Length: 367
Image (cartoon, rainbow, N blue to C red; front, side, top):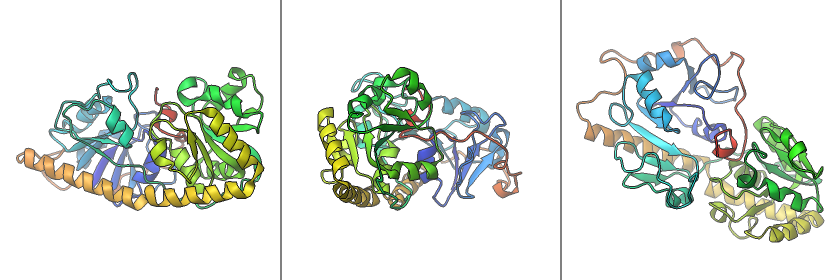
């Protein structure tokens, strides 16, 4: 299948492009949010950088939307309305932005574009109205069992921790520093030097995925102080590394970190006590981390994730064909679509590396 999708959430895309499809990634010289392409990431050849002006001729089979504005942009580029002239799904990465239970989803009460949520929590809390919805939980590319826990420190991944403050629990970090330093990785962490007086909250930079995984695994435990985001991918990745995790029991965390695979609580003092115990007992930390890795390996399997997406995309295209039997997919009315591998390759052009982080809200999207 030929899929049009913008590179919005690099961590999630790392898994999505592992499938057997062609992924058309709009790519512009500016390498901004509307043309990031591969963003310098080491994705399979099926993830194809495409100049936006060529998308109409390439005739995608389906569009995976991730931002409301993409509906108008796809219409402009394809000459076809998503959900009407070409099959489309809307992938919702985020929790409701304003009100927990009364926020109406931008695609609520329409039937042309199904909404795919990444967590059961999100599907439950968004008001989707009569729109068709489903949940496809995250699938994680196995980073390998790298955990050593050699450093007596806690690790956290928080993008824009100053701007997003209470949402990401930045104000809670200093509660742990009497036990051990807290090393904070992610975008714009350097701002912590001015926003947090405690010098033991250590900005640690925005690292490429492989380097980030290596550095996280050297810390004794992973701290997830987030109050209100979807489900942080870095939390699941830390578990897959074999790290013990300490997480606020908010949003989807209580499902992602079941008993015996980490410590969760809405009381930060409980997490402090657990952190103290893991810092004092490396063997216990290793044992808890091994259980976390085994859980993620089964519960957030990459294979299951890709199979679920194949099913949803197949069903979406089949339903669209039944509802629009006389419609053609986007593009010119005759002739075979050109092969993507005949395009000039764009992925060797210099560009901005996609941000890393623990979820879409921590990948540069506004909270």
